[in-house]
Image (tube, rainbow, N blue to C red; front, side, top):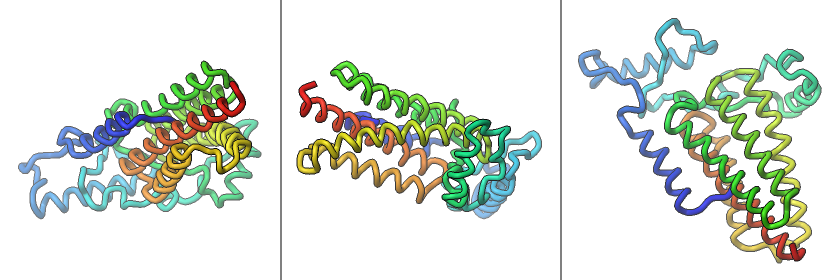
Length: 265
């Protein structure tokens, strides 16, 4: 959750270069009518087939929306496309079922839906770069622990570990999977615990004593998180959520460090 400018630029460049790389997608040649008017029709048909494949079962051929198609994923969030989850049951959530049902009911099904990150997977460069942004939580938590705040440091570390598990399963299993919803629910707990602890630290410090850099990174992180819900699909989500990881980690570290200084830790 805490970045440097160099890492920020690296993350930006990684996403941009992969989006523009001709090797990032399987694109048939002009001989297969993928140029000009025929190409546009071909891309539109493939994207339509992908969007209509709600069960992920389309025979032996993987349906991959082609890069730069304006209708890729229709620009819609998973919640817009598929509605409320229908797999919130004891088989999926076990003892956490009452909590999952409460969260689902309070938010009208929105909170336990998640972005479809296709075509990124844990084995693509973009997917791996996205998962790597969770290392900022590990770095920030370790740094706080070494400086004396093992409690907040441990919460930050735990948030990073669960975030990695959630996003790995999100990349691996794809849309509408109970395994991913369970990881998301646990992620709410761990991330929430770290955020609450950081919020208490900020209250103890007083708004006038919070460092300006911590306030700026907190605002930046919040904006990036909000934009994840505006573009809740594919590469746009990965880009903004990567920045959320980086900036929120940095914010937590800065707040924790200032709290240590104020308490003589």
